[in-house]
Length: 443
Ligand code: SUG
Image (cartoon, rainbow, N blue to C red; front, side, top):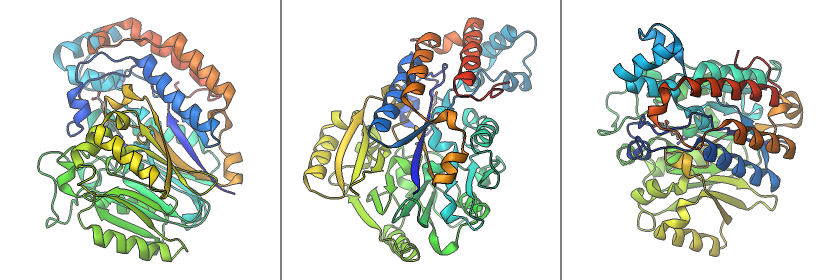
């Protein structure tokens, strides 16, 4: 039987608020706030552990090495490491912040994943995302491909693709704009790609205020290289007006799992067409799409952006009902909290809502769904992947102790020139590669 693994991003020791993501309102709002990397990592681990305790398959994707001195040196800063950091702080503080960003924590953006049941060659395909819309995120993909190759090393079962060329025409943000609908995780499914704009179709509307990060051309390229059947693949344009209200990825306004699509009425440019195409594609794999549509009268787009209601995880319980894993902010937002109460009381497809305090990540625009990458694995694939990243009780205990030992509880952008920070991060990551059984990950 196949299971859906959630690979949660382990928050790195340099988690900070640098306002790097124009179009992501939380990122801009919290510019220069002090962060708490220790709390951030513990909040993420607590969520992953709680879900593992409920029987959901959980694994970890490690943080990446920071600061990226190679970026700063390539931009002309020279001398000792300390001189490079000081020079960048003086002349290009944004570049310095990019070099320190802990953004790989949002693993929904790491890659797009197609389970083996969907792919023509019978292998599970993973494409690292180029994240080329933001400098700090465009740095991620080489290390992402590398760690995915270490975890999914068996090339007879897994295909890890490098990111698409990092150019606006092929902007790709990974699984945050990709949903899979299916009758059962291990069965063939519908792969649903949502894009913000097209590079080559000049007639297609695009947002005016904020960038559309994902292009149609990138989504099509990923589907093609994964060998997906066109009959079971759907491409849909996000509503450009909601991008302009802060919906910078589709997973801020829709989430789907199994046969259920939970979405806001304003999510897509042509809702009726999306539903028809999904229904037709689902018929090709004996699935029935069920929709849970949230009307703007119940929850506005602004409410969705403020509470991150749709950035919840949708997990299928053994009884076939869905569990919604929401950020704490949904409980604190009166209209959204009332909506969730009605939802559960209605005895519909979502039977239960649980919430977590992920505030450290949320303040950078990353909710529960941003923090995980879904990978459906059959039994053989599960055995073939690297075992050291599976979240067992023992690994959880080791990781929390590791965080307590190595992480600061306060970080500001002014700390980036402290060479002590760089040294602490090096020591932390050297210890982490031993814990995860991935020697050489950072060297
Ligand atoms: O890409 N924030 C991330 C949040 C990613 C959320 N992911 C999903 N929706 N799947 C981003 O905008 C903020 C970094 C800063 O400002 O310091 C940041 O990168």
